[in-house]
Amino acid sequence: MTEFERVVRGRRMTRAFSPEPIEPDLLAELVELASRAPSAGKTQGWHLLVLEGVDAHRYWDITFPAERRGGFAFPHLFDAPVIAIPLADPDAYVERYAEPDKARSGLGSGTDAWAAPYWTIDGSMAVMTLLLAAENAGRGALFFGVFDHEPAVRAGFGIPDRLQVLGVLALGWPHEGVGETGRAGRSASRARRAPDQIIRRGRWTEAGA
Image (tube, rainbow, N blue to C red; front, side, top):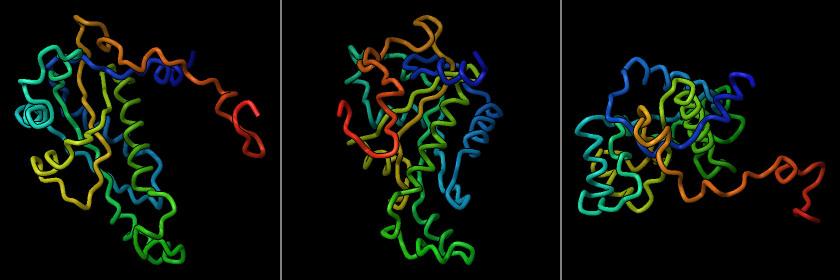
């Protein structure tokens, strides 16, 4: 097995963390690797709002107040030393594609000109790269959604309306007392699709057709 295969096959969503902090240099290294993900026009229109210490605790107080935590299946999730919110900037893509070398594309006229939201695509690829980088560094990571809590999270941390909240990352050392990742999520038992269930060749056909 190659090192790349080990990282990809070994990556799991971690739901139990040790409170031990992540070294600032390591966090910067993970983000630097994530910054190398593909980016349309090399716009690099994504940001990472990092919450540590009291800010991380405040995130949980906003989204999962203490009175609701009794019986929660993953109590050590709240120990993650870093909560990071990846944000995508649509305006950065419009501005980049209005520049002389991209203006002929017409994509600089506004977000409505884009058939696919490349700010979301690029930000998502950066998040995936960061997840793999964390695995490679021996750290745990969990990506999860904000869902109904987004307005409160935006207000609580001053996130501008123009930025798209992609989700949330919890980062840290896996909790040794409950295994590397904690109890498996409800979807863990679902079978992974095989390549022949994913690939369509030459022309689209429905599965089984």
